[in-house]
Image 1 (cartoon, rainbow, N blue to C red):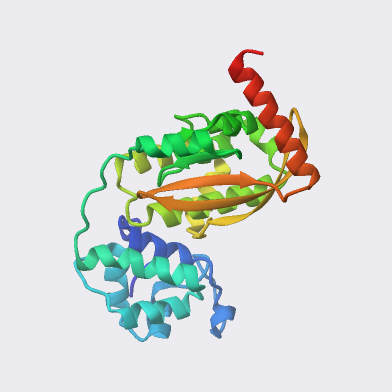
Image 2 (image 1 turned 135 degrees about the vertical axis):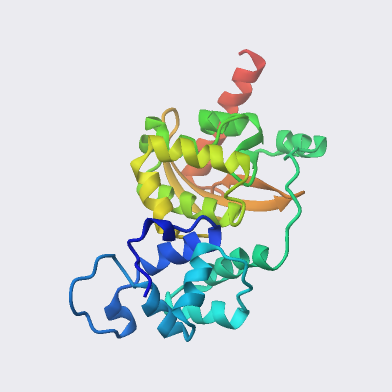
Length: 281
């Protein structure tokens, strides 16, 4: 029988890490198992997941340890059912299993084409380009007037977790952090060994206890669009919509207000201030 407390069983592959994290969040009661005796680990044991999914304990152990195996879609679907994954989490699990079946090409450096810089300059709303690890790669003047953390070279996840001004800026900072970490997991998926990802995860793990907690849970989210409320230090409260549009393998992020709203008026004031600063007025 496997021992969940065995340090040699710690998974070093993304698929194994995800399975281990998610089984730790499912209680025996949730899957109809009796709760008896002393349980040394939170959530389900490996042998319990294996039994409920209809696979051998040895096979499941090989999955968590990243051995050279080829999990079928049927097995992954059974594991998703046992671990009570939602649609986004199921897709993430299937995606993590793909590198086991075939190697993926290495990522190329993220570069912003000149035409996207021109597009940003022409837009009359805060807009910027971000990479897969939430690095700000290009931005317009209104975006930096909206938040100085949207300058080129900043990382949105690092700013959100480590910059005290972000906690004041975001009305729903706790929800924003959980959403961003989940979206970061979804974005990098099986690229957790990418140098940029390793550097960022290492930095945030050392500096932020909240990041360590959320990273350990392995909650994945899709952060495509939505609404947000911020307290801007100059123009005050802003209720804005956010959209993320894929362009050339990057993401164009836009913030905008409902037409005719108080937030739209305040955003217009911010745009005037940004133009004045640019012209030296």
